[in-house]
Length: 62
Ligand code: SF4
Image (cartoon, rainbow, N blue to C red):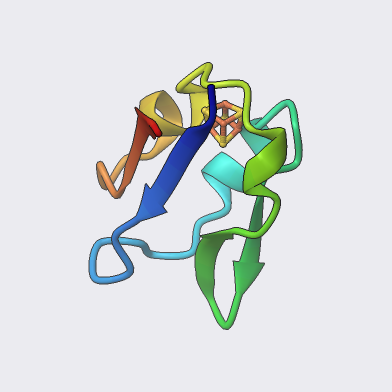
């Protein structure tokens, strides 16, 4: 089972809430936007979804 993390770049403000909250270092800031650069490590915990004030992140099962 794999998790797919998607960031809506139009909503992302680059506040790094998800980058700092993710326990698996899945997300990094790239050119001012959060990107799931380490998606294989995702635990599916949805912490990033909960902390994002913009509702920019979705996590789903592959
Ligand atoms: S679901 Fe959890 S492990 Fe996956 S990117 Fe979000 S915070 Fe990180």
